[in-house]
Length: 473
Ligand code: URP
Ligand code: ZN
Ligand code: ZN
Ligand code: ZN
Image 1 (cartoon, rainbow, N blue to C red):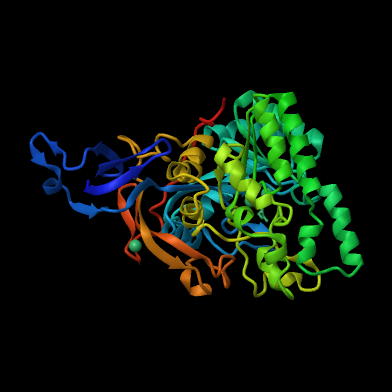
Image 2: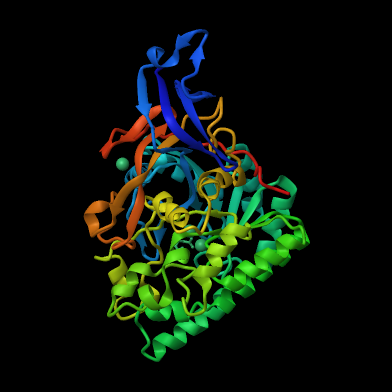
């Protein structure tokens, strides 16, 4: 069992920061010590296998990205990152755990699908991974499977109010699933967009010849997100199930979540870097077919309407609790290109799993969030929200030794293709200048990234059997 000492760094948690040394023994954290501490009179440094000097750097718990879609079949194609390439890219960016989504399409058996995803991931992941379950066919057997999956460590279930014929559940089906969640303690996750409204708007736009990527944004208006968010909250209130609204982008949806929380409900919201930085006007509205790079749902919102600024504010006030990527990458060539001449055929999704920690750190640089809040929204809260806290999301004795050494004086320019490790032929983040740099990444005691070198391996990552949410009021 190798011992590692990370010395001289500033250890940052969700609640504070301190100059401290972190001792790792095997795959867990053994101690967080005053700098230069001795152990029974012995200098610790002489009794470890490796010393990492983190002077002038932050030592933070590894990132937890609770919303990814590795190799997901979607929109007539498949997300371009496999579990192997996607988790490697995550590691490069300081993320040491992901929670990915198993998909049940209509008429599929939930437990069979869970097994299929376990097999996709097994032996391929560079970092630890857990699963949520998507339910697209709420019937008796699916509800029964929810109980069985909780015993397997799948304690959260996503339903959709959009994508008729693919993912969409009607309100009665959602009600039944939420009743089950209220009974067994599962977190109910919602893709909150009014699909019926969107389908009409999309058809009208395409018929009118408005086929460019920009219309993806215009046909999924904030009213569709606000309405669906409100409806999901009402179903959660009625049933007593906890609700986690995924990929929130509209300020009006945030207000619905904030109002529900003010009423004391267990309602939570996640946003993603794209909704904090990118916009309908600048990205979706790019010339020609360029905007396809940023077609995702919920869509990028209008900067003129102020959604992005409002989202930063809600991260500060905890109206929104955490940031995941919704990593669902598609290449331009052959994938996004399926929608040339018809935006509705562009596969929905953006790839960011590698950049989340860096992108959110810019909020610290720009004074929008504190250093502690950065750790909280990218690691600690995701771990608590999805039943991983104690093992993940914190540097404390007994926790998994998932640790990132982050250099606030480093700098990265995200450029064309080559500066990322995701399996994508473009970057949604091209041109972003990042202050700060992921120097060293440790996953369960193993150094997997160090000083621009990748030292990890497929198969190091283990399946995370999760508990129930630790975030409920
Ligand atoms: O555009 C997106 N978000 N693609 C992934 C699927 C989903 O709805 O999360
Ligand atoms: Zn979704
Ligand atoms: Zn998603
Ligand atoms: Zn550096």
